[in-house]
Length: 367
Image (cartoon, rainbow, N blue to C red; front, side, top):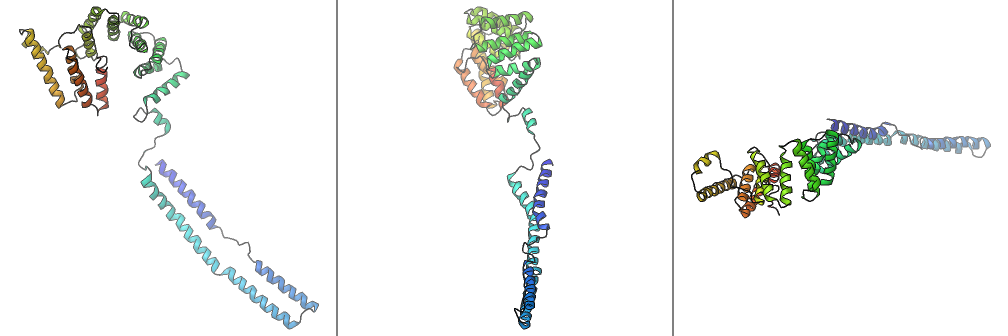
């Protein structure tokens, strides 16, 4: 409604600008100029007659002629030109009152956006929608923190976003500030270690390892810290120690923990993986089978899962289980093929694609 009110005011102002000059009576610059000349001529005739320069008959004839001309000039000022001027003013007024508003509306409706609600710039800047890039939002938070560097909550919000954007050096600074102004915790120490690892190109440096050890000292169940301590052992060539750390992590993780596929894939890298766990009912059915028969049954179940996902590819967790199963079984090519199929299946759903990519991190299939 505010937009239409503004348009109405603008239209009224335009109409007023047109009608105001039309409402004033025009005054010709030559009004009565001819009459003044003719009156002067009459006075001149009287002077000439008094001086004896002309005779009485000639003076009377001149007066008659000048009088006729004076009457004709007066008739012209009162006649048709006034009527014509009034008629044109009325036409211009009708155009201003009717044609101008109608023409404006007719032009705006097809070209403008009359149904779009008010959306001030300040509100647009606060809206976390698709029209506003993540970089823009980050820039706003960074600008806020430049003015309020002790805002611990702001650093806590900014740090994980910077890690996600791959700005690891900035993330390290943000996590350090978060610890300074919010106090230390196992989670913040582990996150700082992860950012340090990212800044080093995926290598768990001595500084990062110290942060992970500090996190575990604060909370023995800090999963991220334990995982990266296993990565540190793997990078140092201590594969058996890495496998022991990751097996212990799996032993105390919930069955639906989102990090289980990542840890199981890491176990595959160091040769510490076992066959995928079977459902409870299936375990009872295969406990007396030979290893060959058990493996055959596991392959059958995995292929059945693959078939189901090809028919209905919306199950992100199903795709993650399938890729993990192929990795554990040592069928890397099938794992890659399943990864490609999974991404194609959820390509039109941004949220499912994000969940899939997060679940597939560190599997080493994209390289």
